[in-house]
Image (cartoon, rainbow, N blue to C red; front, side, top):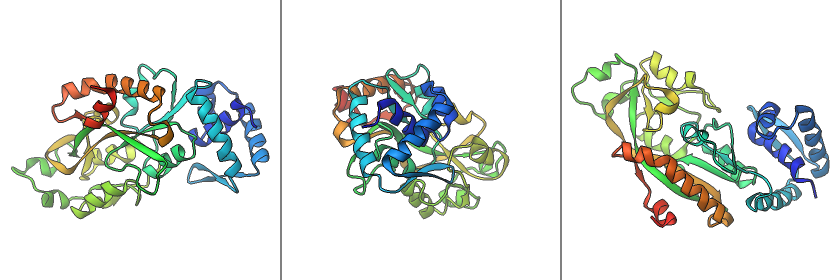
Length: 298
């Protein structure tokens, strides 16, 4: 059995991508992280390879997964801080003040494949992700708890020709290029927007960068998207068109199913309710999901 702090450093490197980020959150020197990484690779007979900026494990990980299950159970029992990953647009709500007993990740991963994998592999204990792209039957070990729902708006730069039109249709918006992420990043969102003739100006972005996303819409005639959560990250430089997308977005919490009713998860849900409540009070079209409220007994 590997010591808690050794596997913690090894998995934190996979999660956070860099030794500097691990040192910042855990106070472990880069030299120690390197030593623990080599120890884990030798112990579990696996290899680490960098692919598109992410650390990927190669080899038979069955013993490592058993060890992770033991260590995760220990974290839920309070032996070490629990780990939370989030979207870039929800991170500002979680950073100030910091969540008690939870470590927040870098919160800049684009797409659901990587984030779901982190929860599936027990590297991360919980994830805040965006609706409507939630775990499917292909991830039966994962459970999603919707938190809030909100509409999605079209966003354009000040002076965009669409702002001068008296009334707008989706066909009008489709006349202009619209931001798109790599294929499969958010499958349901992509499918819905492609049906509308949108999602056609691709951005190669695996980790969020403002200059590649909102920055494009600010400087070009590209149509972007946003919700009530967007200004906390992107600012107020884009203008909202008077037409909403035909699907709702929002935030949901994803955990492994065996921890869905854990008392510490309930504590996290209570804290999230306090953090999202000001937004729900401020915006009439932002609402708590009924399932979320039922879990809290509200």
